[in-house]
Every structure is written in structure tokens, then in C-alpha cells.
Length: 174
Image (cartoon, rainbow, N blue to C red; front, top):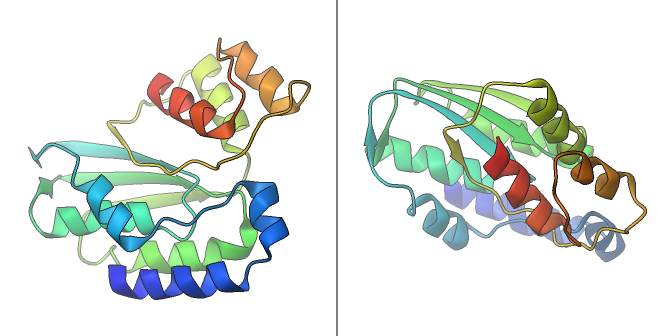
């Protein structure tokens, strides 16, 4: 399935305007990188997985994780995935990528189209189930010092100048 997702990645990347990619800090993860990142998880047998994919794009990273589950490298009784993607134009692609794994793995998933920073800050401040695993390729973009994102991050003690490090810090706090 990952090779199909890779073809989708190439098509979506080609058809997305450079200006839009730049404004979102969007870089869809190539298959080879996704496989490498999923391979970094230590083997697991049993238990439940709560997986975070912040900046999920079309689902390359989540799919690589799920492929690793299918190969037996990661075995869970239940996988609850929360995938965040702000670009609603690619939500159908993301849903299509993930839905293919529902019959093959013990997967349940939720897609969130809002702002990951706002949602994560709310979860940290008001409590929420924590994640057992996270796989992410955050957006590459600077954060304006007066932006809403910067103000939200400060509420949970994060001072950073770019979205990439902000997403990583938020993932670690959850």
C-alpha cells in the first residue's frame, strides 16, 4: 500500500502550488523516509497503541507505521490513531490511505482538520489521554513572534521560532 501512497504523494505534490506549500510549510514525506522512520520504533508485542501523527499529510508516516505492524515488527491489541492535517484539500487522500488498514490491523482512527498547536495546547492544559507513540514530519515554517501560535505555545512553556520544533515539543508533552 505504501507504493500506492507514494504515487499519490507525487501527484499531490506536483498539483499543489508552491505558494500554498510554502504558506503551510508542507512537505509530504517520501516512502523511503517514512519506512525508515517507522523502522526506528522498538519491537512491541501486545498492549494498546495510541499513535499521534501531527501534520499527517496524506498518511505516509502512519501508513509506514501500520505496515510495520502488518509485518509483525509491532504487534498491538488495539491501535488508536489521531491524525492532524490542516490542509483540508488532502483529507480525502489521508482518509483513503488509512481506511485501507482497518480490515488488516486493529485500527481505529480520527482525523482532525484544525490547528494542531491549538488542539495540543488545550489537551495539555485540560488533560487528555496521552500517546504511547508519535510519528511526525512537522511543517517547516517560521513562527511570527506576534502570532496566535506563538501565544498558544507560551501557555505551555514552549518558546520556539519554528513550527517543526513546536510540533515536536507538543508531541513530547502529550
